Length: 65
Image (cartoon, rainbow, N blue to C red):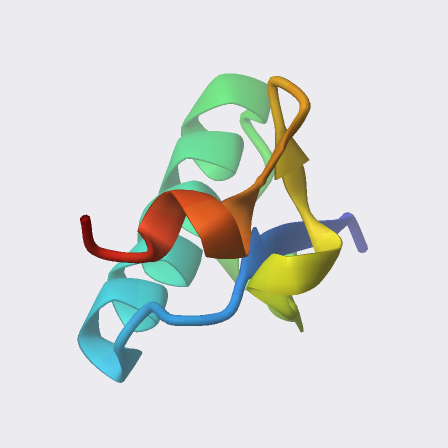
């Protein structure tokens, strides 16, 4: 049974996260030939203040202005 963990910054809505796990599951099944029902996919959310993108803290990038 394959396991796929997706780590993302907090802030995505439930609809987006649902689409992410279902589409990743489908893509993994298509790529490997393994039945989609065999995959376990989950999301781990990280506080944006604990993520850096190109040396800039994501929380700072998300602030307006």
